[in-house]
Amino acid sequence: MTVLVATDGAAALLSLALVVPDLILMDAMMPVMDGFATTERIKADPRLAGVPVIFMTGLTETKDVLRGLAAGGVDYVQKPVVVEELLARIRVHLGNARISQRSQAALDQSGRSLLALDGAGRILWSTPRTVTILAAHFAGEPLPPPVISALLRMIESEDPRSFRHAIEGGELEFTLLTRSGPDEWLFRLSEALDGAEERLLAARHGLTDREAEVLLWISRGKANREISEILGISPRTVNKHLEQVFEKMGIENRASAAAAAVKTLSS
Image (cartoon, rainbow, N blue to C red; front, side, top):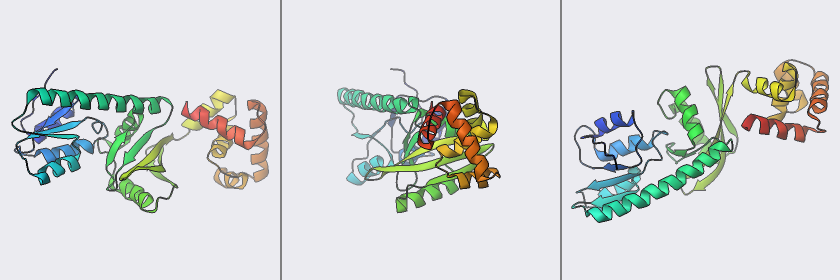
């Protein structure tokens, strides 16, 4: 094991900005920033949310144990520490974290950028691709307050509609998939940069720019009349472009075209 030491919570956060450890041993009582606040900050960062935090402290009251677990700790070891027991707990939590990381990486490789939020809008976990997307657009802030507010409204109503957030050069789409635990809601995150999806569809399927635009909106479930309003062309022209799309892709209907487009965009 390689051990990095920080003497207070603020110093720990500075270290974590440079390196992501496999596991964190957290004291509760520290100067500058205590272990509870530090753990909450760690768990709010998608890059660090999957790192297990074990509290190792002299605080022994039940309220302190509950506070440590509520902050995001996976375990609570009271001092004086029995080294053999501590090492056994470390091995268990490292094993669980690696299983979780492999599962999230598998979801990521399948083209699914996912994140889970609790009822307060805190990120519980996310796939690696999601971490990359959020870091690129929110400059180290997990989710800005307007996004959290919109997602919480979706959670409160458990409405599966998507929420779109404008970013430079495109938008992010958050779609509520399911309630995956007592206090956990699963979202899919999609990144749509201006023109990027159309260019990919055109290149992959040999389409013109306009045909690729029509196919993109078909994949998003839009009817011909809606597409005509979005693109500023007549529904008849949309239908003609769609016929060309079918011919070039070798398919016969809208459902097949939409499925092929979704597969292309998620690969």
